[in-house]
Image (tube, rainbow, N blue to C red; front, side):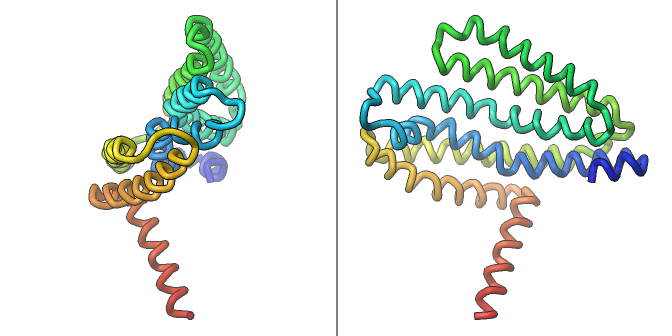
Length: 231
């Protein structure tokens, strides 16, 4: 769709489609990243907290996962933005963006390497987050009329961020009330926290008027209702 808009010389449509896709991505990626940050240690404990893995190694794996999770939105934004340049037959700008991202990653990894794997993961997360913003800014400068009507996207992503933050508070409360310890306790935590957190996110986003979440829920409800009618 971006390529078609560029070929037609319709930069306004190009901008609308890009913003819509970015908002749709944020609806899924932002809450997933927040949930991973909060639940990183139960996830690591469930998958690794047994056998030859020591508690210290499991804790380090959890810290590493949390550090990577902080960078998930920026990483996703970066990989989403680059095809915007390719759709406009521009391969030069992505080359320099990749060069900058890798350079920043190395520059951050040198001082953060002393923190071990979590430090390297944090360097990776920061580098991709900075590069993601830089890629969107660079694309904005190359597209006339890009982002002329960003208000709907801004409102939608603000609602997603707020819903994710409130979900994080709920997940932290659940973690404090659920058992801790080995992989069995971690499984209980994940089995309770994931569906409850997901449902809370959807409910809060619905209440805040995040239209993509509302549309998705209505579409799913419609399909379920249609299936019931057929049966």
